[in-house]
Image 1 (spheres, rainbow, N blue to C red):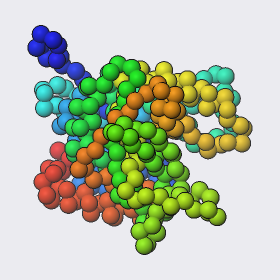
Image 2 (cartoon, rainbow, N blue to C red):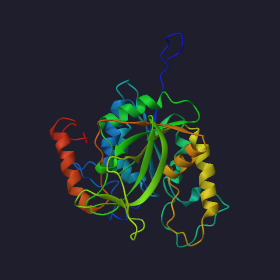
Image 3 (cartoon, rainbow, N blue to C red):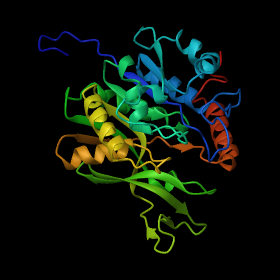
Image 4 (cartoon, rainbow, N blue to C red):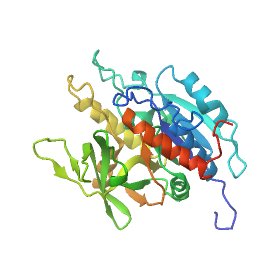
Length: 317
């Protein structure tokens, strides 16, 4: 709102990272129809984002994936209208090796994408407004998108960001280890985030970091973790590019699976005093699929949300 009382129609985009390989899942979990009428998890995020007021959806996809996403939901999303009466814009950004800077020689054996920082950078040309960025295979909850949008539209043009935090105990799998950004929160701001790659839940409820199997580190189940639900302004792309280029310069030829990760970048910017990240809390419940064994649990949870009226009988029509 301007000082004279005029309301400015601010817009925000949702960037969906859907180019992962799904190696632990054993298939294309981004497009797997887990909902009761074949809905993919990201369709719920899109539905929740649009009804919160996001007016642009950007899919970051693998080469050749656009026809699949269009048929799954992209063309339907392009016909949606926000509660404010705005048509929803849809864009597609391909995450592939053609966007890797020329100074880096990609090893012939490399097949894995270069991670979430690179995924976000691939969307740069389609994003000229405040934006949230999420994983395609995580369910974040209805209210998470409304609190994110409200904060997004209040961010300063530079030096500020935000994230939705979840409790560690609600984000682990019974079927294997998971990766999470374990956070330290100070008076509502993110003080530190540590990307922890092998978090294991035991039957007795204990949760540990098993990166070193000989010296497992206990983790507090109530810890706040990042599920890659970040909010930024376009200013962040310059920082992403600088960090990604340095990441590539530091890679050795044998690091064929190393990834450039958003939580690591955010932590570095916070430590350097370049970024202040507000941590948002909601009553939303997160769930997602890492392994095939997670699928039936998520399918039941989605069915209950439809049955209780959180979503219409089908998101397809």
